[in-house]
Amino acid sequence: MKNDAPANPLEILAYIISAQIKDETIVYVGTGLPMVAGILARKTHAPNITMVYESGGQDPIQGGMPWSVGGPFTWRKSPVVMEMAYSFGQCYNGYVDIAFLGFAQVDMYGNVNTHMIGDDFHQPKARLTGSGGNNDLTSLTENMVLVGLQTPEKFPEKVDFITSVGHLRGENTRKEAGLPGNGPIAVISQCGVFDFEPETKRMRVKTLHPGMTLDIAQMCTGFELLKPEGEIPLTPMPTPDIIEILRTEVDPRGVFTSLPSA
Amino acid sequence: MGVFDYSKEALENLKIEAPGILDRLVDFENARTVHLSKDRSKKDKRISLKEAVDEFVQDGDVVLDTGFGYVRTCIQSHFEIMRQGKKDLQMIGAPNTNQSYMIVTGSVRYSHNSYTGAEMRGTDRNYTRQLKAGKVRILSEWSHGGIAQGLKAAQLGSPGVLSKQMLGSDIVKYNPYLKVIQNPLKKDPDPSLFIPALYPDVTFIHAQAADKYGNAYIYGPTVNDLAGAAASRKLVITAEEIVPEMDIRLNKRGSIIPFFYADAVVELPYGALPGSMPGCYYWPRQWWEKLMRFAAINEENIKKFIDEWVFGTKDQIEFIEKLGGAKWMIEARRQTKAAEGDNEDVDFSYQEYTINNDPGIFY
Image 1 (cartoon, one colour):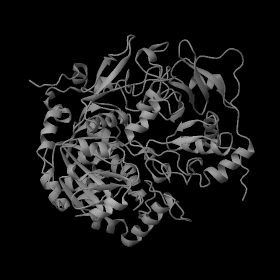
Image 2 (cartoon, rainbow over the protein chains, first blue to last red):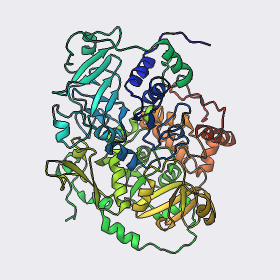
Image 3 (cartoon, one colour):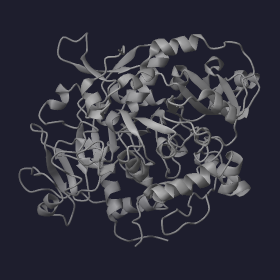
Image 4 (cartoon, rainbow over the protein chains, first blue to last red):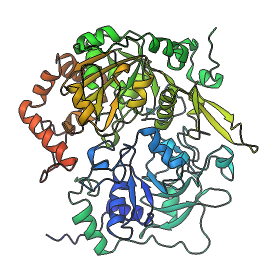
């Protein structure tokens, strides 16, 4: 049965993430939407990418959608499954081109928090998971893309805990801290795609999704967004062909791309 | 006075007044002495899980959480540690997801935290609550890669590694073991992070197969377990099956932990439950959803859940009965084989556990 419904927000996000992926690159993916996006990229504009995972799985044969990043779909018939130390080592050594991760908070310099909400480490409003691999990938990977929901609380001026250094305090401070790579190159939310202004390294609007205005994006943000010169372009939207591939070949059960029913 | 020069800023931030508690994790001389004193003989090391926990886990030990959160993790051994009322353990691991429920019963009192959670199942509200109530003290914060490098340094036979992870982050301010130093070979400033080699006291590793001497075969992600086995003072191998030594020598071409690290071998089929085991069984997914969405939300629920699943079962066989017995075993094997590409036509859809809808099944 053909599903002609217009793309839902999660499908649109999966497409926008996939559009960041260039062909013939090594892509470090987390589970959830980044994995959907990686497979979509492979089935559309980037058939020759190699996907690698924190389980250490390298280039698995595509299966279904995984329930966990350690699950078999991330190392299905992998020629090699790396130990954890080596799977992050490959980011430092220049064998990963781009990585995608989520966040609880991201600030104006792309620093990420997945540790805690609140200002007291010992009595937090909420204690979160801690770093996991977030710090390792953000520290080491050549290009980092952050994906998440945009609200003023999740986009504060300063994060409550710097789990992962993006551009630290802007300008050259990431490099001065001793970190390699470009750091975060993009933030993708339900509002738009953001990049970082090359001098100050402050978050800047790159494109807005159709129907979104700069005012709304700013209202969803806890700091002042920089604007590009001239008119802000619209984020390209998936064509019906791409939506059909997403629905029939990538995530047919809608594990990560169907909206929860009310 | 201690021999280690811990980061003062981190000790202050973490409010650690008696830093001696940090020593064992990085005490190489002691770990080496313990390793040197191990019985080298190739003898039958098989004992029961109860005996292994009783003999090799001492109150206050630094315990390594192995596998990957709930993939090939020694969870049935954790449950036995809780049943025997072991106390005041420090837990380290990348991740260390399983410390959360072990805090509730007092088995884990200290955390070297890297990641406590269950991915998309949501934030672990139990961990927040235990932390606020002072039932767990964080002794150090880590990234996954930082712990991986610390254990790997031990396996490499090195005092530590210079790393580019965690630099500039608040993790360094909450980890007494880490020091930012200048790369000694560079003329220009090149801040690098010294991560010391890490030596847990006791480690349980669940393997697909082992011989009675402790040669253990792992299939699928080994994560940090090859390094952890080399580093740990005491090592207990638990295995889905015990095989002849010649089977390991001739057939098992994957990852092997050598027998001389192992102090004990436990035949423990389904020892990773309620986690998954590559080649053997898939997760009872609803168990984890129920843990995170129901049990974790308040103290009463988590205690009830632990009473039911940990203290209410005496071993993994009773645990399997509660999951659905033979029906669960058949489904779990079918699903894991399909997920690994070893059979076909398996439907992975299932009835998720939500707070409003408990399907009452675990496959």
